[in-house]
Length: 352
Ligand code: SF4
Image 1 (tube, rainbow, N blue to C red):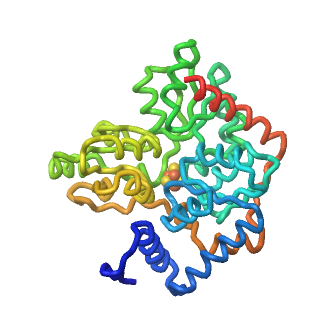
Image 2 (cartoon, rainbow, N blue to C red; image 1 turned 180 degrees about the horizontal axis):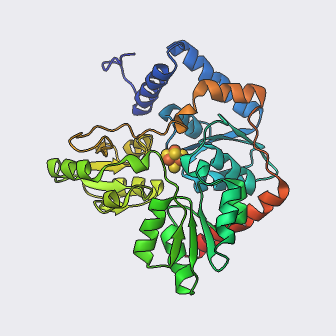
């Protein structure tokens, strides 16, 4: 689809048109008219079911825009769950990956929580099966168990604390200051970063994110030399040598805020590239370049896309709403235990 720049177009419409174009690229069998019909039908279904769409920064721009247009929400995993909790909607539809749907259900058990796509997993969650994790915890009974949000409800239920990337460092510092030794799971890179910065006594589960682990420090260094005025924003799921090159290390929300608030015009970004949509909205006119993940000499070459996040799309959302399928259900004992470790994190965050 080409845009006629002589036609008055609001910026929002242009962004929407580009998002539809991207959606068509993913769904070549859908015409522009079909996509418009799909979006209109989704809006009708959301309203009729008193449902709200909550989307992660990493999903397609079309879903992010639709969430905001329909009084839903776009944010990181904890913000998504909090929004679902506070919303008066009867149904929360999660555009993200499975652990996000589970977190929403853990915090809002009385609500119906649907996933757009239940096969949308996360490599960190998959790398930490509950039975193996329980054995790991049993081998370290003297340690406080802190797990990243990217885990199953069962793993959260075993934990003393849940942590997001925005809070992990402060939380572990707090626990270490109280003399506690930490068992951290599942992300080895985030764990190593927290261990290095906090000096805490930690044992680490050896999971990783398939997107962030691919960022390459040598190629990033070369890109920095090529763009000396650019600032480097890195998510701490990335390898240590990549984190070492960052001007800012932070969660998705912290990275977006840094792009908005820093004076630089150009940013090299080491996280899933779906975030660029929100960064461009938060900091219009600035330039965002995906950090390289294809090795030395691969200047600017990066896919940086999560295959599971990209399973979320408009036709699947319409189908979920039409059928009421993909509901998240969690055993009540597991849910209540997981809620306890999440609530401790929320209260710690509120008291900071
Ligand atoms: S980008 Fe990485 S951490 Fe995020 S959902 Fe995908 S695999 Fe998991």
